[in-house]
Structure formats: C-alpha cells, structure tokens
Image (tube, rainbow, N blue to C red; front, side, top):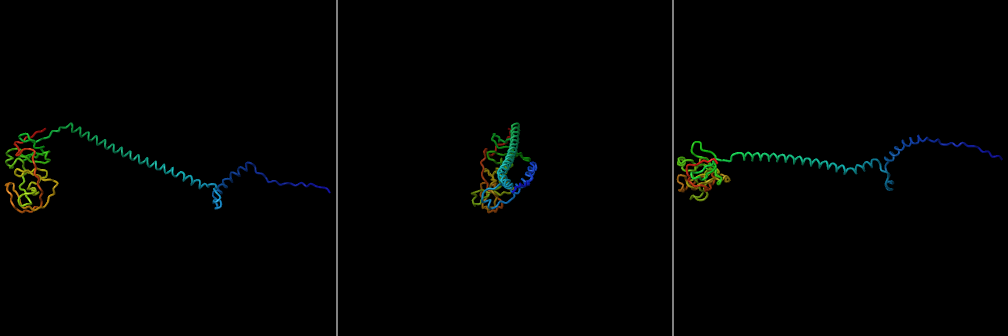
Length: 268
C-alpha cells in the first residue's frame, strides 16, 4: 500500500506591524488605567490588602498633606499684617510724642526769654500782702492774692479809703449767726450777695477774719443767736430761718493788721 503525504496549508494569524502595535498600545493604555481607577474596590479586595490608589484619592491625600502648610502660610501672613499695623501705631505715637516735646521746648524757650516779673503789693513796712490781681476802678482798693493763704483779699490802699471802709481789708461781713443760743459753736453767714458771699476770699469781721470753704455745701439752717458787725462783741438771741447759709472758718493773716498805709506796689 502506498503512502501519500498530503500537504496542508497552515493559516497564520496576520501580525501587526511594530508601528501599529505602539499606536494601539498608546491608545488603549490610558483607557485601561482610567477604567481601573474608576472601578469601585470590592469588599474582597479591601479585605485582601492595599490596591492601587485612584487619581481622586491621590489628589485628596496631597490636599490633606498640604493643608497644614497652607494654614501656616496664612498664619504667617496674618502675623506680618499685625506686626505692620503695630509698627505703624508706634510710628504714629512717636511722631505725636516728638511734636509734644517740640511744643514743650518752645514753651520753655518762650518762658526763658520772657520777663518773670510780677506786680506785688507791700504795706508801708515792706510786708508782702500778695500778688496784685486788679486795682479798684472807683476807689483806692486793690484785689491781691496771697500765696501762703491761697486766698484773695481786697485791701484799701490809702488811709482815707481804710477809714471810709472801716478797715484796711474790705468786704466786711454784716453779721455772723449761730445755731446755739449763746453765739458759740460754728459761725454761719448767709450766702446771698448782700452779705458778701465770696469763696476763697478773706472777709473781716471786727478784728477777726473768716473765709468760706468751697468744699462746704450751701445748706438751709435755723439759727438762734447772732452778732452784728456794728457791735461785734454783743451776742443777740434771735431765731432766724436761713434758706442758704455756709459755715465760716477763721483765718490767720501772715502780715500785721491793720495794714500799714500807704500800700506800695512793686514790679519785680
């Protein structure tokens, strides 16, 4: 029996060229990666262990890592702004203080260049009466301020005026009143203008001198005795209701009284 070899044609799968392979790979690879990245991770895969990170997860991780850095940068920028504000405030304060110092220096220079002389009043024996504030317009009187008393006085500058006023210090009290019945205790005087109510002013009453204290309130009182200026040694029992009255305080003058006339004025 004869053997025959029958030749068979083997069909081969056509091969892609190298160029086509590269092109196909470059197109399909991104699609594959995108598909994998967007596919949900199954519970089994999560149990088995880590999987490749998705793009969204990577971006979230990056944002989480950068958050403290961004917060730190924002804090530094805010601190810089606050420091600049503080520096501006200090510069403004310095400018204000510089101007104030300059103003004070100008005042000192002005005072140093000006005369410090003042018009002073003395009695005939050169005892200081006080700083002259003003001179009487229609009479021979002068208002002076005595520094040791911290009080004002109105003085007669001539013997004639002293005799006319009944004393060398004018603004006499017309009367003083007491709540007691025997002219003892705190003396009071009405505070109406007719009775010479003047705070921080020496007011004569006979041979005694009084003043009001500005810290004392004006009150309403009932008095039961009084002394009049025309009879300063006589106590009169009389009940009087006063709507406005203030206590009087005795004053010791730092110069002899009555004032030795004539009064001298010295600019020194």
